[in-house]
Image 1 (tube, rainbow, N blue to C red):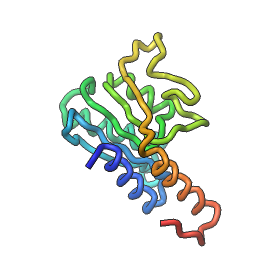
Image 2 (cartoon, helix red, strand yellow):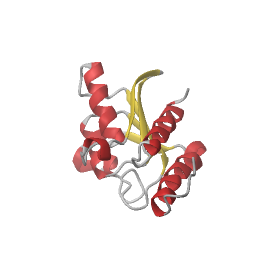
Image 3 (cartoon, rainbow, N blue to C red):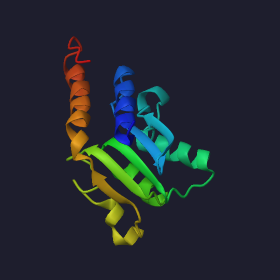
Image 4 (cartoon, rainbow, N blue to C red):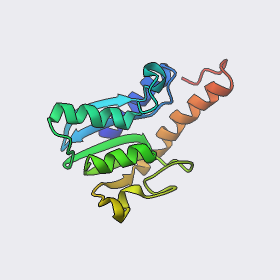
Length: 153
């Protein structure tokens, strides 16, 4: 299973739990290190984004806060907090599914990893092949929020 397929699987789990359906998977080469999804509602934690949860767990598993050789797959373009954490963890690569025109910080609103003041090392790219699936997942969540009788599973 590809990194984005795992991230999408995590996003679907978040949707079922009533969380904003963002999923992430952290890889070291071809090896899955960990995966997760948004848990802000469950944990009552504004920082419990899928990306941060994966970066924390990845550092714990690898025994190093430096994630230089890792790739993070995430269904939604990282926000400022998550993009900042990627830079601070020295994450090697980020691949995201759909852009976020409101707060996306890997090219949509701002390119935080490329800011020279941060000495960024994180490269990012959008996964156009899975963009629609990632966008559809988010749209299903917001349709449910607007009309709880709608079941878009």
